[in-house]
Image (tube, rainbow, N blue to C red; front, top):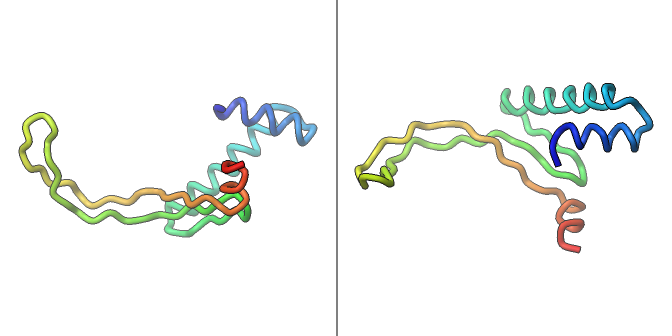
Length: 91
């Protein structure tokens, strides 16, 4: 399911226009992005949690040549599924 498909489903379930549903979805995603980028955790009870995690610098290997390369430290986003989502997936 892509973002426009999700907005259409939200519009149908909430009995609002597709444009308004897309606006709400964009606002939600914007706020989750802003919070996680500041290092805050975002928890949606029953769905899951988003948080920022740090990766340390490390030495990797070039897959074509086998030569060692240095991989810089970086931040990434982690998602941990909530209990209700896990149960729905495992039905």
